[in-house]
Amino acid sequence: MHGIAFEDAARIFEGPTVERVDDRFDYGEVRIYAIGLVNGLEITVVYSDRGEDERRIISAWRSQAHERRYYWQNVES
Image (cartoon, rainbow, N blue to C red; front, side, top):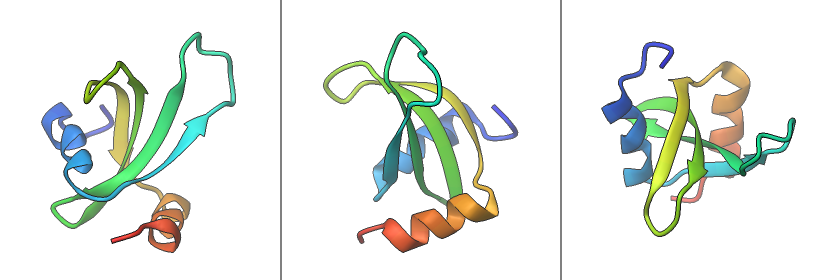
């Protein structure tokens, strides 16, 4: 997953995240971008919601500069 371990990707949900729906294409499911922190680094995860406290992680990567700015401008601590 772009150099991010699955276990680390899942850890962004342990703290505050900034999320938005990925509506660029019809994926046949709702996909959500989430940006959060793991060990002090901003990580971006794309996931689909599978119900109560269950998420299917599709992809994860170290957030790019514009994603980091978006996170810090919108995160609520």
